[in-house]
Image 1 (tube, helix red, strand yellow):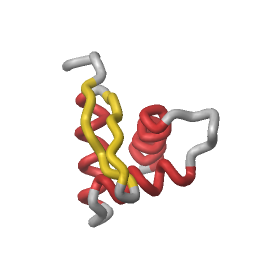
Image 2: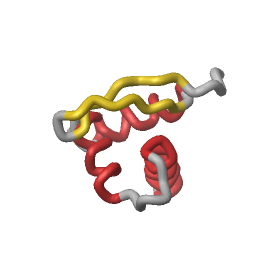
Image 3: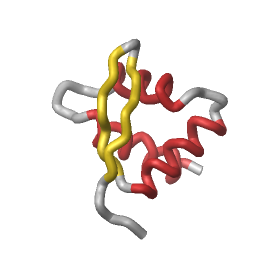
Image 4: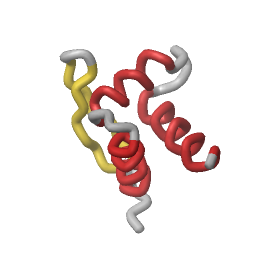
Length: 72
């Protein structure tokens, strides 16, 4: 298990950005996107649009993954 965040590039509405997440979150995020039949960049853009100004994108993705995994 790698607890250090790793940076990956995403494209949100045509703009490149980097997000740092732990490998376990990247894996779960990719799996959720696949299950939803949605490209990871599209899902990240949806999360980005719905997050509050006081929440960073990496935190918003972690919370999204956590909520999805605990709702089942």
